[in-house]
Structures are given as structure tokens and as C-alpha cells.
Length: 226
Image 1: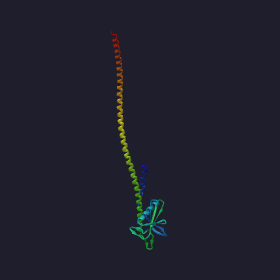
Image 2: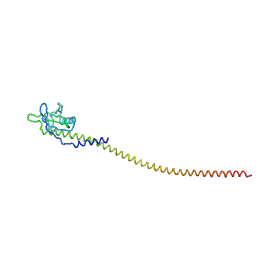
Image 3: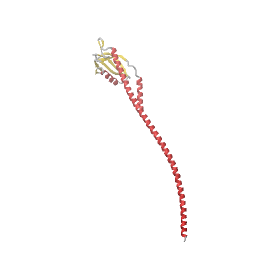
Image 4: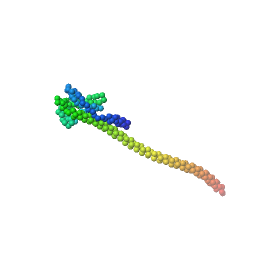
């Protein structure tokens, strides 16, 4: 488990190092049969991930609806100003990236939305997406960090428990060894006492036999007196 967590953390390191400034380029797309000028930003993510983020980003600024391959938003709010013309956005998969194009059709007098503001609008989305993606990596890293710290805490507590048990075991071993030595000494003392007891019994038995002989001799002598 710990190895998996560490691998997960290390996997985020190259991604963090790859974070780069968001670059926006002017590009034309075909809307309702007409070339429409807009701006495109390339992002390192899957089309589904980018589209979900773009939809959420646009919905926060106005009402959106799907129009073919495009997301259309009426009365978009750009740079704090509401415009009456429809904004179009689309997501396209590239080789290793996913591009987002956003534009607003132009009128006879030129763009309905100043290009600088539209460019900044696209740039702001790219920045928001990158920050959201990095935040997700930060959140995942924090979860991994918490898991590692929890594992570390568990191992530290386990280490303390093992050391306590070892110390208790060592004390018990010392007490048992002392008790064994005392038991050994007591056994030796009892053995000596038993040997002495056996010898004393032999001596008493010998004395008893001799006394009995003396008593028997005296009884015989007593009977001989008449």
C-alpha cells in the first residue's frame, strides 16, 4: 500500500514541473457557413475533461446550449460587459492536446466583441482550467500525503509497541533466568540435604540395630538370673 502511495505522489512530480504559461492564438472557424474569427488555446487533457470544464466555465457567465459541434451562449458576459451576440465555442482533439476555440461572429462594422477582450476571455479560461487541473493534482497529492503520514504514524506507534514488548520480554527473561539460577541453587541445596539425610538415616539405622542387640543381650541376661 505504501509503495503505491509513493508511486502516486512521484507520478504527479513531472506534471507539476510541466506547468507552462497559457498561450492563446488567433484562429478562424466555420460557423453557419461563414468564417468566424476567434481564439484557440491548447490544453494537455482529454477532450471530455476539457469540454466538461468549458461547459461549466461558460454556464457561470450565461445560458448555454449545444448547437451541433459547438456550444452556443447567448448574451455572453465578457470582461464584465454583456453582449447581445452569440458566442460560440468548440473542443477538438489534437495529437497530444485538446484545443478550445471560442469566437463571436463579426458584423459589417467589424467584430461585435473587441478582439483583445475575446483573447483575454479565452486566456482566462485556459488559466482557470490549468489551475483547476493543478488543484486536482494538489488535492490528490494532499490525500496521498495524509495517507503516507497516517501510515508513518501507524508505523511509529507500532515501533513503540514493539520496543515496549521487547523491553518487557527482556525483563521477563532476566527474571526467569534469575529464577532458574535460584532454582538451580535450591536444587543443589536440597540434593545435599537429601544426601545428608540419607547418611543420617543410615547412621541412625546402624545405631538402632546396635541398641537392639544390647537390649536383647540384657533381656537374655535378665532371664538367666534365678
